[in-house]
Image (tube, rainbow, N blue to C red):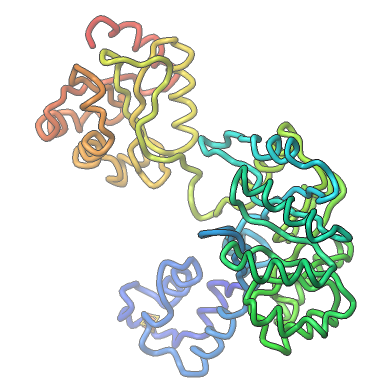
Length: 425
Ligand code: SF4
């Protein structure tokens, strides 16, 4: 669990000497709690205090990465509740396919699901290949078919030794998550350990065996109920029960179940099926829960094209606060005037806040203009600024060589404004 500002304050000498650069020990403690300063910034913390602090920092769910290339990262959580700090690695959503079915069409359909969430394309993160009781030949064929579509992270369910051998020998670089559900796990522990592949533990005995043998990347295949998972996370983080501090793999029966486990602590969720309309809700829910509460929601700062733009289309400037982006882009869309929307990175703050904190200024807008490539896309050199930042015009025109047009202060007036200047751009 993350330490609160008050907990950190108790470790400090409370002399308010200001050597750390802030006026009081309490203010420094709050900065450390918010991860805006390091405890080492105070030279007077006792060795005991440092040890207590680092012990707490070490206490987190272990991180496990699986899949080809950078794959997917799971676990790594440090807190029970998001408001204590943030949740870091979104639950991996995997969909199960069976080696016994004709999977070509199914895999194609699943991998074809592409959902747009806050301008980011979201897809299924992984596939779970159920090779339990399959022949080795069927299993191999299944993997080949999947990889003929896409090399994505795989969770491999199996219970036969020949399949385990095949995976260890042939797929080490793809780093699949091995779910080897076999009572006789003792006989296979050496192979699993040597393979260095991530592995799911299906029983307490298997988990202990993996830990005792130094297997590094362990995931707990959780078969208990929702309340038990809640307790396990509490034990791992609050009471430092390290043998529970591993990412958790949960197999769910329906979307509602999946939503519950997104809200509470599953690291990898296996769905039996997937339809885009339900995944859209689940991905949105996941994004909301895993949004860092310390950072404003933002969109990617880049050049967006709205409608069928051409060289004469207007160029509208705004910030990357997501509400601002959506307000402005929807007004441009509604105006039916194709336009370029150049989003300046202001750390996710709105126009006025960005202006007040110097996160939008002539230099930053000019940099965004130059880096976006807009100068090769339009034949004119006029940009529309949000009305609130009109004082930037003179300097901006000088450094950029463009002419700034002062647009409306509110996004709702942008459509009318675009119509009014149509002939001027
Ligand atoms: Fe307090 Fe340490 Fe900062 Fe001095 S340096 S004000 S003792 S936190």
